[in-house]
Amino acid sequence: MPQLNATGPQSDTEAVLAARLAASATATGGEAMSDVQFFDWLDERRRKHSQEVRRTTFADLSGWGFHPDTGDLEHHSGRFFAVRGLQVRTDFGPVPEWSQPIIRQPEIGILGVAVREINGVLHCLMQAKTEPGNVNGVQLSPTVQATKSNYTRVHGGSPVPYLDCFREPRARGHRVLADVLQSEQGSWFFCKRNRNMIVEVGPEVEAGEDFCWLTLRQVNALLHYENLVNMDARTVLSCLPDWHHGAGPAPGIHSDAAVRSWITTQQSEREVSAELLPLREIEGRGWYLAEDRISHERGLFFSIVPVDVVSNRREVASWSQPLLEPHGLGVAAMLVRRIDGVMHCLMHARVEPGYLDVIELGPTVQCTPGNYAHLPPGAGPLFLDLVEAARPEQVLFDTVLSEEGGRFLNAQNRYLIIEADDSVPTDVPDDYHWVTLRQLGELLKYSHYVNMQARTLVAALRTVAGIAPGLPVAGVGAAGIAGTAQGRGEVRADHR
Image (cartoon, rainbow, N blue to C red):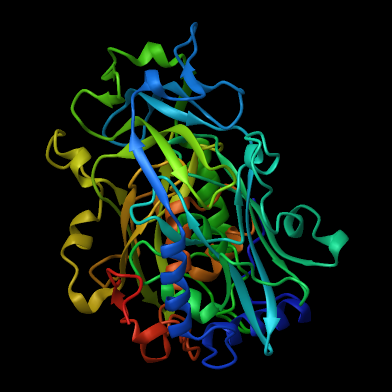
């Protein structure tokens, strides 16, 4: 368990970096690209990017097939990923045992954002990227977003731009600001991890055709637009060193030692058994195989569907693959409140079968409400009623955002940050804990503590004005991109 730091930057170097990030998060001048120019650029990228995703059948899925012995859905190269079966037993949640398909992708990819100073202000190099599962084609992604199979060019396609900035940063004189393995969705992936990196580069690194330099203020503002900043960009942004706090204490209701002890207790006392099975063995255990999908008999949760893809802006021009298609819009909501003047987040120690270490800290509420309709009353997630009944003035962030479009088809969650009042007690059930934003930032320096959905909400909370005493954030509001409104995200990413 890492030693948390409750007193701010530990060195002059860290303090200088925090100040540079804070300046980028509040800058309203010196941008490499103005706010209006960004949307013009995005419109142009969307016109240039052509992608067609067509549903097909498993029999017609080029390069993929069901293994004759196990029934696992695999690529003929043995690389990329496979769809396998999983048998789960746990003491967490209303259902103690179930079977399901799950994506097994053991290789570790790279998610990296390059940063550099332009006009004295730190900028992030962001990419306009099309993914087959995106609801709207082009979204804003990290500088590099590539699986190992992709960047080693198993597909025989073109190389990944800027990859050497992250594979050989020190040899090229770059400075690594963050480098940590983080998990992905533990209900859909089995032990999936990606390397999240932020690397400061020099002026020799320029933006290519599908790339642009944006300040942290600009990127933060774009988080409030629906389906614009993709999942991989959000997780990397959450791993940025926290720029909100200067020197001086910001004590939480629970000490750092108490937070460490709580996490360790949850890891030690929760029971979960997740056993990979041949995919064919889950047939008849609530799941069925059709010619064009693997689905649950109740129509719940998700399906595995085959697609053919044609794209003019990817490493290869066409390919086939399976995608996981969720059923229903998910909800990921974090309750926050000030306790003794310090912002705290109500975190949930979640058990998901694909996690490497039993639990990770998730948002207060993380669910797809429709998946609970067949269960007895009271089996739904705790605190969901408070989220659904939140008054408009309590809503600090409310935006529908997409999950990873390379593996999931039209997967979206409604992300909310709700400012709770004193009716939400500080004394909460054992699997919940009030944690400060700074404590979360410290945990994000290490692997497998904060889950994917919570990382998105950490990035989102950092865009909300006034979360730290005396430090406004200009990511939203009058100084934000095109006057983005705080709260409910814009439906159109090109809205001016």
